[in-house]
Structure formats: C-alpha cells, structure tokens
Amino acid sequence: MRLKLLIATEDTDYAEHLSAEISVHHADVIDVTVCGVPERLSEVLKAKKYDAALIENSMIDALDKCAIAMPMLLKSEDDYAGGAQAEYKEVKKYQRISSIVAEVLEQSARVSAIVRGPDKVKSRVTAVWSPAGGVGKTAVSLAYAAKRVAEGKNTLYLNLETFSSVPAYFADSGKSISAVFEVLENNGGNIQMLIKGIQRQDSSGLHYLCRPDNFDDMNVLTVSNVSALVNACAGVTDELVIDMSCVCDERARAVFELADVVLLVTDQTSAALTKMSQFATQHKAFSTISEKTTLVENKDSAISMPPGEAVIRLPPVRSTDPTEVYKALSAYF
Image (cartoon, rainbow, N blue to C red; front, side):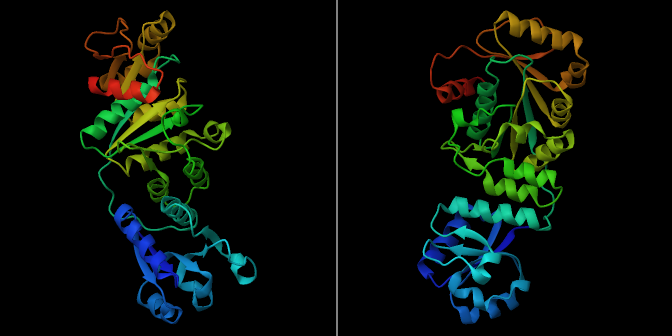
C-alpha cells in the first residue's frame, strides 16, 4: 500500500511542481494530494485519511492533528521557528525533491505501522563473496548488477562490506543506509518503504544505498538484522546484488542461505587462490552453497575446483577509473 501524503500550502506553483514530481518519480510508493486553501483543509481531511502531511506555516492553525499520523512542517528559511510549530518535524521547503521524499518516508517508517499491500514476488538474490580481499569483488558485483540493468531488470546493489566501496563508484550525498539500520534495531516501521525512499539511482539505472554514517553502524548489525535487511531489499526490486565482506561469519552464512545465486570471486594471486582452495575443500559452508555457486575467475586466474562447478572467466581491464572497469566487465556475464 502506498503512503498517503497531503501537501498543504498556499504556494500553488510550488505545490503543483512538488506533487507532479512525486507523481512521476515516486508513484509506486506515494499517493499525493494537494490543498492550497486553509479554509478547505478540514474538508479535505474529512474526505480522506492521510499517513503524512507537509504543511506550510500559514495553514498550521487549520490543521486537525488527529487526522494525520505524521504531520510535518514545510519550512522555508524565512519562517519563524517556535511556539506551536516546535512540536512538528521540520522539512526544508527548497531542497531536492528526492531529499524531501526521503525525509517523509524515513519519518513515516519510524513512527507508523503502515499496512503493506500484497507481498510481491521476492526478487532474485545474488551474493558476491570471496575469502580474499583485493580480488575485484566489488567490480564483479557491479558488473553483474549492470548486466541485469541492461537486461531490463530493476536492480538494487547492496554493499555489506565492513568499509563501504559505494563512494568510489557512486554519488554518495543521499540519505545514509544507517537510517535503515536504526529502524531495524528498533524492530518497528516499514523498512521496505524507507528503502524505496532513500535508494539512489545512477545514470545507467542501477539503484544503490549510500554508505553508513560510521563504521560501527555496519559492525553492530546482528544476524537477524542482516536477514531482515536482505529480505526487505528483496521486496522492492527485481534483482538484489549483495557485495559482501570477506569474513565468513554467521552474518555471511545468513546471506548465503537467503541467496539464490552465490558468485565466488578469485584472481591469479597465490594468496587468493590458496584461500579459495581452502574454502572449497575445508570449510563446511561451501557444501551448503555449492549447488548455487558460480566461480568468477577475475583477471585471468586459474584455480582447481570440484568437478561440475560453473565458472566465469573475466579478463584484466586496465583503467584507473573503477566505474570503467566494472562496466567493461559487465559484458562477460
């Protein structure tokens, strides 16, 4: 079910622009209504229930707060802050509309138990992992994700590395994934709605979530937090590609269990080949995922794996631009 949002402002040009942008770019998650006359606000609120509202200062006095689960003050720089207004969450009026949408959905996800519509078919989940660092795991993750986008799939890239690679490949100025972590830890709210609101999209159409605010935000996630995060992300896209940390702990095993496909990445270095061979022959986790595993040999590597294993071989790509690297590799999937 979409969030029902009311925009209440006498600035009709702004209201029309904001509602039009939301209707075009966020119609899958927000149902928007506009009220531009204070005298009509009570009538509008009686006709329909709203989950959230963006209300300008001039219309606050006409608001029946009981009719809206999450009223927010749509505030310009010239507005006075104080008095009765102080009880409202403030949203800056003149900022990117994507940022306004993210704030609305984040606040609603925190405080509201908005009922979801019928569960959509769970997306295909691809986990990308390696026991060795520096083998090009992130480049492989993004190359595979880019291939799926090119095939017409709505694709979300989820980075679960200890230290995020997101800023090296994408603009990282949006709402942090830490907002999702906070909702997960509080065991409340509509996580899927929040993810839809804060996900970014690059020029190719690939969706992603911005890095955590700090190292500890990722480090303190529990196994159940990680499972809930993966399931929530899998519910908002066609294809979920997870770029994992190199550690094979209980959180990694939870991701392996939820994944439909596991890409194991190695390269030609002795250390990487040795670690991959040990994982394949000595670690009990391998036996649980072997049937859904494809080995990705990056940079012309060569490794001996058990018979019957699927293998993808990727050539070296010589470029100092990491984005060029993964886009060039995407053709090989």
